[in-house]
Image (tube, rainbow, N blue to C red; front, side):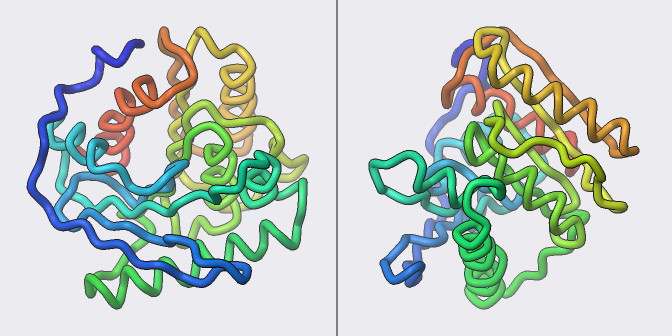
Length: 226
């Protein structure tokens, strides 16, 4: 799939709010919310991008809120991997999990005065953060009723024993990214074998924002209705 397959994304009028938290001794722009956008509880590689809300507007899916968290700006890619993928650094991952689960969610509740029931909340990630979305969904299905994982990396692989309760999971990967496609299929098979509801989509496309953005409205419509 190419970027032209995505719904036409016109600019949308909405409020964007950013807050900075202290994370691991350094300031991190921890949450950015588009208050009237159409999306689920969303995890992206970068901050919540208004354009992704515009894709949802163009697709006319159910109104929802997008909440995004900035990734680290450290040039060492392994710093990000250690935050996103449990096997590499359990302590670092646990600190990031706390930041994601407690600080950001507490801010969303206080800033917007909303509740986030699991059946109406998804965690989303692409590439390395696609691993993170799966990890968070498996660890906290009571919080995230759905997982959106696009082109997940393979540092985090299916465990031998799956949790008893599993979130619904939508995986997508492109035909021109075989490394990531194979890992998405690996997760789809493991989750299905464990009894989870799974969608595995393979489309023509490569590793990048246009491919992921084109699939995003379909993920949201699948999880929350058109």
